Amino acid sequence: MYTEISKILKGGMEGKRVSIRGWVFRQRTSGNLNFLIIRDPTARIQVAVKKDKVSGTAWKDASEAYIESSVTITGEVKEDERAPGGWELQAADFSTVTRGEPFPISKDLSEEFLLDVRHLWLRSRKLSSIFKARHHLVNYLREYLDKEGFYEIAPPIITKAECEGGSTLFEMDYFGDSAYLSQSGQLYGEAMIYGLGKVYCFAPSFRAEKSRTIRHLAEYWHLEPEMAWYSQEDNMRLQENMVTYAVSKFVENHEDILEELERDPEKLTCVKAPFPRLDYAEAVDKINALGGKLEYGDDFGAPDEALLTKEYDLPIFVHNFPSKIKAFYMREDPNKPGTVLAADMLAPEGHGEMIGGSERIYDHAELEAKMKAFGLNPEQMQWYVELRKYGSVPHSGFGMGIERFVKWTLGLHHIRDTIPFPRTITRCYP
Ligand code: 4AD
Ligand code: MG
Image (cartoon, rainbow, N blue to C red; front, side, top):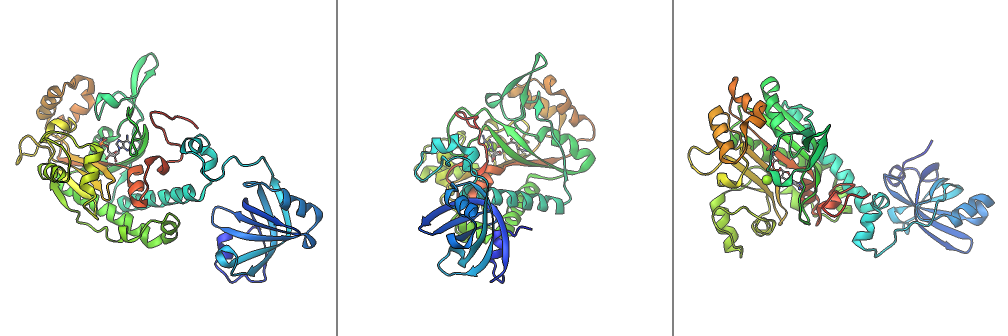
């Protein structure tokens, strides 16, 4: 029976004999005494190995262990205020499972090198904490949608549909024909609202983003709810409530992770719906007043969103973008012609867009006309257009890039640290 290290650190085990298993985090020898810090997925603890208290093999194993050698240890729990965490294990036995080779990662290595050895770097405290956080955040988002009565659906990843514009499509050979890796599950979600009402998919999306930025990946995880009968107003309410729920649950239950990542919890405890809303035109004026150079009709670049969102503590919605700069399926706002019933949710502190959502065109003729105006051939997406022929209803939905959400929540500089094996224009390894 092995005890998790975090359980020992909770206290109440003074004098008890326990066994732990894990990896060597640090090792220091002085004469007849070996001090090691051992880590497991739950925590780290100091282990003291005294030459005269253990067997010859145990002493040899402890003395020769490398950083990241895997080990099992049996010993007595002692309170020791000099030890990190306040507890020490005084070894009675120490056994190396795999000694391996000297670990290639030490301090002060370049980012590029660390990305090359990502498969090993994933064991670091920082990345382990981030991936624990990501797991919890995704769970809270799902939990919210479940409570709201959503069904999770499985969209195809190989598709012929171009959802978000041809320039970022990854094309592939499909048995001698051509197909794409999905940019979004939305169009398929739209087909499923007729049977299920409220649905979401959570799947990878692919974008052949040709630039190197701190917020673009070529492969990212996309959470995409789609709801029958929802107006754009209902859609935005759902988004802000979902974000509020996930963020509040996270701060409430995972203070330890925030501390480990040096993320100020106050940046998250203030996140409560409703979020501020800005019309696109207002946002353009504001960005220009802050030093940007936009004209009405321009799409926002990352620097524009950074300027705008540095002003806010809460995520904000920017709504009513000009139709021309948004996707073909978005419904025109009857009250503001030339603009669409769409909004992006931008994360504060300069992080920028993390959700894109809209009301969808549900009229058959309107969709055909708009596709043509956008240079798309309705016949190539006949199945999608046809949905408007049989009991079409108003509906809305949105897509959240999980890595963007994690990046903001944890206050991370670069999106690559929010996904274990980042795919970017310059990297597809490891
Ligand atoms: O704004 P986008 O392109 O919208 C759609 O794909 C819609 N079909 C979604 C929907 O309504 N169901 O992408 C949605 C979100 C963005 O707000 C951003 O968070 C994320 O996906 N995203 C990316 N994340 C990381 N790397 C990239 N290259 C991303 N491109 C989009
Ligand atoms: Mg977008």
